Length: 110
Length: 115
Image (cartoon, rainbow over all chains, first blue to last red; front, top):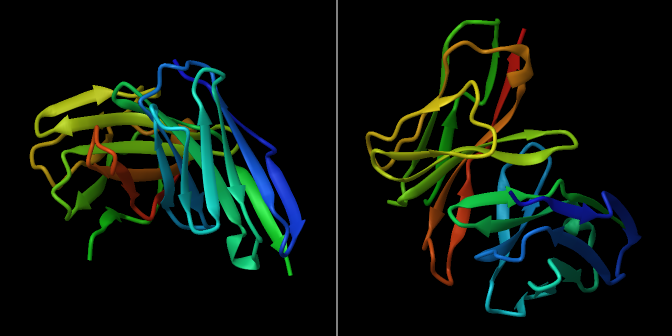
């Protein structure tokens, strides 16, 4: 069974700063890893998907990397904006099941 | 518009009173799942379904039932709810399973309080 950990649990940064969110998982035999964003009182929105054979994916100001052998992924957010404030979750797919981390709550201060 | 809908959005009930939370998707996805989200524990998968009439247990299936009689619907059933099932529940459907465009679409959530 996968254990997915996200550090830090909360992060507060000034607007414009670049930042990195971390995700680690215990079993490297994953099919893919996905990063989600969750806004208060709402469901999750998919941000980036990295297949197990890939090293990174980019979408706009977001870049996600995957090191499957070490069980780590990072989400890099460039030039942060107040609208980026949300909780970010990573999830790994192991077989036909999905395992989520507990999330990092990000606050970007104007 | 592509979406996953859940009903009800909020529910207060009492211990032992059977309830059903409905989930419906309009994207013709084969894979659907239910999660519960609790503070400090994140999202945990309760049940998932690979297709019609095919369901499997996730990480925390105890106290829950599901059915998949039609592709678009995946109801979550609590036969005898208990206070430890108080939680925020999400339904999700997944497109492009096993492909490079695999994406989970989440419903808005159902907040359940069991007294």
